Length: 266
Image 1 (cartoon, rainbow, N blue to C red):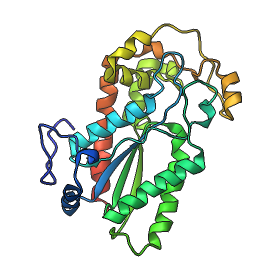
Image 2 (image 1 turned 180 degrees about the vertical axis):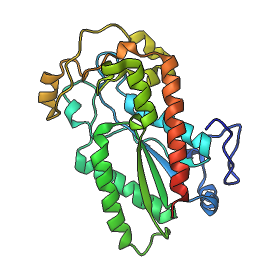
Image 3 (image 1 turned 90 degrees about the vertical axis):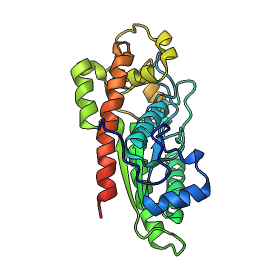
């Protein structure tokens, strides 16, 4: 989707096209809701990404993709939730994790808040695989809660989870570029996107010894023993900013289409 997005509400500005909730006033949100019931909610994680990857990788990438989708669709985007379920990474300094039950309640409460104001289509852009099961559980809990609420402004309520790194376009490109060295954590594809977003991170990149092979995930002690430097079968030294720009475009193109289709669903 390279064409300019359509202004679906009076606040869309082609000179500043990212529709950021945190820069709106409440009357502007009310007016937006007269024209569109959709909103984008980015969620990431704050966790280790190997010895050369930024701890904020999952939040940085989720936010970048969500902002690009907002630019292309004109749909409002919330501030990024930077903490996720990263219990298995707690053996590495800097990781900050929410327990699954905490993340579930957090996402549930955010969804209920949006429902109360009349948002009906919640599109979560997720940057961390460890969040997936808990976010889906939060959807189920929110549906149950909303079905019993008398104070929700939403006539209907639907949620969709979009994991940018799992889109077929991104997956295909990553494996075309890196083969089995893409691995499953601290991957060159996600590191490439951070290099595009934050050029200062290039100074941290260096060749690394062969990683531990991909295997199971249990608790943080086992993870630290099994994956000595935090990587799972990946070689992030293959990453570059040029590839990162490609991944951003492919992810945003796919998710923009998914979002617009979602908004049209009954």
